[in-house]
Structures are given as C-alpha cells and as structure tokens.
Image (spheres, rainbow, N blue to C red):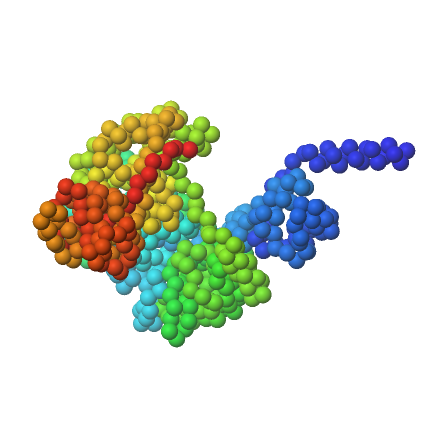
Length: 600
C-alpha cells in the first residue's frame, strides 16, 4: 500500500514538474530566503540544487539575473526580476479603487520666437499659486497655477530635446503638450519637430495659436498647415483642441487653461495617493551650500519630510522639501513639483525616485545596483536596424518601420517623404516620424531612440559628437547620396535580401594650421591632431564651414620630416592627399576606416 502511495506521489510530482508555472515577479533586492518563501520551496532545497549546478550561495544572497535563470530551469519556474520602482508603479496602478484625479502636468513646446516664454510668463503672472508671497524666489524647472479652484503643473523645459530625452529613458513625465504656433509665421521647422516629439511620446496636443493681435495674423493659414502635419483642429472636423491667444495682450489665457482642464478630464489623469511616494527627477544639480539637490514631480503617493528614498544608484532621506516659491513643505502630493535635499549624490534627470521603508533598505538597493554596474556595462535598449528588419517581420514583431529623414535640401526631403511610404507592404507599413533639411542633430537621435526609428541621412554626414550619441543610444544611421540606393536597400531589407554594407569607424580629427607647397610633392597640410589619431592610407574628409568639400585617401603622413604610419592626439604632423590641392588653413580633417559588414 505504501509502495503504491509512493509511486502515485512520484507520478504526481513528475507531472507537476512538467507543467509550467505562472510567471513569478520578484523585486530586484530580494534575497534567496524571501524568494524561497514566495515560491513555496525550502531554502535548503534551493541551496542544494544550486550547489549541484556550481553555485555557492547563502540564504541572504540577493537574486540576480543568472541565479534567477538557473532557479527557473531547476524548478520549472518563470522568474522575472523587476525594479522596486516598477513593482511600486504596477501596485499603485492596479489598485483601481484607490486612484484619484490629479492635476495635469503640461509642457509648452514650439518654434523659437513663437512666444513660448511670453506665454509661460503671462500664465505665471496671472495665475501663479501663492503669488501673494512675492512670486517665484527660485527656479526649480516647474510651477503650478490655479484656475477655478483646480491646479495645473507647467514644466519649464529648455526644449523638446530634453522632453524626448526623458521620454527615451522611459519616463512619462508630461500629460499634455501645448504646441505654440505664431499666427503671423505659421508652422516652422521646430514646430514640426515639436509635433513629432509629442507624437512619439504619445502625449495629447492642444494648439495655442499665438500673436493673434498682430496685423498680419492668418489663423486659417496656420490651421491649414497644421492639418498637413496630421493635426486637424476641431472646428475643421478634427479632434485637436485649438485656442487663439495673445500672450502679449493676455488674450484668451483663461480659455486655454479651461481647455487643459477639459482635456485632462477626458483622458482621466489619475494617481494613487495611498502608496509609497514615487516621482521622476526633472533636473538635478550640486549646490555649494545645500549639496545634491533635485527637482521632482510626484506621480503616486505623498512624499513626507524625513522619508528614505532610492533614485538610480543614489539614495537618501528627504531632509527638506521646497515648493516653487522656496517655501518649506512638510509633504508633497501627486503632480506637485518639489525640490528635495538629502541625496547621497547628484541623481540623473529622468530617473525615478522611490520612497522605501528605511535608510538601510535604500542603501542596500543602492549597493546592489552599484555592484551590477561594476560587473557589466549598463544595457542600452535594443533598437531596430535594417539588418534585423526581415527577421523581425517574419517573427511578427514589426508591423511598422519608423524612419527619420534628414537631407541636405528641402527638395530632397519632399521627394523622400513621398517615395518611402509607398514602399509599404501588407506585412509592414513605413512611417515617417520626422523629416527636415539640415545636418543630423542630437534631437534627431533622441527622437529615434524614443520612437524606435532608423535615421536616414541623404547627402548629409553626422558629426563625431552625433556618432558618439548614436552609439550611446543604440540607434542606427544610414547615409546615402543616391535615392535609388536608399529605396533599394529598404526593399531588400523588407524582403530579407539586404546586401553587405560599409561600416565606418572614426579614427581621429586634425585642424589645418599651415599650408606648405612643396615642388614635385604637392600641397602638404601642417596640422595639429585634436582628437583620436590620424593614420596613413586611411580615408578622410576635409570639412570647411561644416560642409564636406572633399573625401579621399591620406597619401602621406609625416612627423618632424619623418614618414610615420600614425600620429596621435596633441601632436603636429604633415598630411598629404591624393589628387587634392585646394586645402586651406582652418579646415578640419576627419579620418576614418571602412569595412564591409554582412547582414545577420
């Protein structure tokens, strides 16, 4: 009888082992003992199994990715490690009954000189919370206004690049974007950029048509131009709210605030005030007297003075809280901008800040994160490349290919934006996220990172600063000078037939200081190497006034009359080019190597 029972138990346990368990989420700082309690397996059993796999571990050891994978395999589990911030956010948003309406957080964007600053100032002066105390006494990057008994938080950002950088880091800080367009000027390049950045962040837009007091204001022209950018205003049958304002004359500011509150009611902006406080770092600095200081926007919970917190690898205790008027606070509620003192170090903009139970827990999480950084470089998010496109299409991961188009002239931009969407197929749609003439900028790279887009450069080359940012953000740039080659590459990528491409590796940069004309040798550029190194036989571009005037091979390289194979930073040298003599003092020589890279 006992034997039968044992056999039955063995069969049941075997059957249980084969059936997959549900996904188990554990917090990043969870110990083996806590994990054992969560999955219902004794700690000693887990330790024995891990020991057999070559892992020596105790009950107080923190579970990292490698241990989680081994435990998952051994016990037929699916363990997912989440950050303490993510766990708190999921918990806060899942408790639907506790969610309460919170004030909207608004960012004002648009083209330079269209009145963004004037509009911000006008709203501040007429509706600033606590203005009776003497107005703003310090700048903390955000402020609140009161309209009909309800609060609105405005973020005073330096530009949409910063807005998208926060978004690229996964931080959804803004609820609504106010797009300012001048009635006498219309939609301009930076207006288009602002629209595309807001769309990439999936944030609703209200259009403020400014400067309606001007004699040459043409509101209908602005609305027509906006419709071409995919923003059709309500009075023209669309769903975009528009308000005609004059920041200078303070016309219709009340109506604009009314529309912000109306839209926030429609999209139901909510927070959970009953969980431990969580927010996003808006900006941070090191103050000579106060130490590390950060401005945050609270998203969930109520932050109280004296509470311990973690932010990235930084930790601390809220020693003091200040509002936008410099007044000391005891607590900060959802959507409230607040300046905090008490960080162990200067945190990074875009990082979450999360209140924890005590300082010991905060230090423990900080030390764990620092140990992970020492073990390996922080992972950058994977972004789509043309080489990976076909594989992703076949796996069903990609239904849309997002592109950012930058070309040397506006005519080329128009041609490309017309041609490329027509290459869409049944499996994948080509979407132009942003297009403009000019060089590839930092804003383009951040937008590509945020929207998982590929940057297409036509007759334009990125600078080394941009290439460094591209590497950091893990974004792909494809450069072309023939439209046919570009369209063929897109077609081949979508059909899995992409041919090998040339990969460019930056070597170094030198500045031309003097020109030497040597009989029977030619023109030699006397240079100082500013960055990296210059190598003989490498390819190089000669750049003048930010434009490439020649590209060719370095035929000779000398140092103190001696022929050398390479020359490093801060050394002087003589550089000669094959079949090029029109080099001038002040030109920049950028050296690089190219190699053939086959698609995966």
